[in-house]
Each structure stands twice: as C-alpha cells, then as structure tokens.
Image (cartoon, rainbow, N blue to C red; front, top):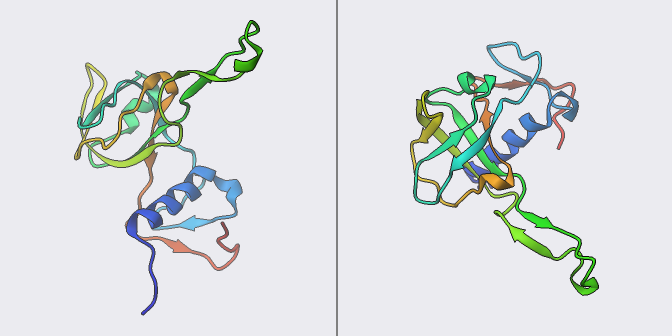
Length: 157
C-alpha cells in the first residue's frame, strides 16, 4: 500500500507553492497559461468569530475578484504586541497585548458576498476566532481542473 498525504496537507502544500510565487522554482501549467502567480488577498476588518460563517473585509479593488465558489485561505498574520517598559527592566519585551494567534488558518469556500456591507460568507462555520487587530487576511486559493507539472524545471520544496 502506497502511503498518501491527507487531503488538507496536500492542499496546504499546493497553496504554499502558490503563495511563494514564481521565484519558488515551481512551474505550474494547466489548460490556462499561467504567466504569474500574483496573490489575490484582502484585509479582514471585522467579525471572524468561531462558530459564525462570515467576515467583513475592506473595500479594496481586490474585493470584486473574490466570487461565490472560490476557495480561500483565512489566516491570522499577527497576534502579540510587545512594548518596551523602561520603568521595569524585568518585563522588557513581555507580551502586553494579545490580539490573536499568528499563523492560525482555515481553508474555506465562499458561499455569498454582500456588496453593501462587504461581508463574505462561507459554506461552513469558522473553527477559530480571528482578530482583525492582528492583521487577518483572506487569500484566494487558485484552483484548476487540470494541472500538469513539466519535468524541467523540477518541482522543489
């Protein structure tokens, strides 16, 4: 029996390759010719509570590029702020304000968008809470119906 990676691990590896961009040494081809792997992302500005199925995003030009049925990665980019306290040398650099867990992420599928409130809803509820004060991003995960990886250059990690 040949060991296989769980689906979520395979998806994460593929997403990371896409996030690294053209300098990663990977060349991906499909029915559509890919000339660059520019990431599409948007900043989450509200909501993101565990057990709910939506977030509020900012009104950037990228908002229109997120559509129903798209697979997205919701990720917390920062989470702890440290401030230097000169009066107390023993506490210098101690975390003083926690606003989330950096690196926390979920793959989701967009169910709908509300253009007035800039709310994006997902097909399932969030499993964790994301705090927008800690730079939360919604990144579009590109998907293809057919994918061919050329033998040269080689796919490397």
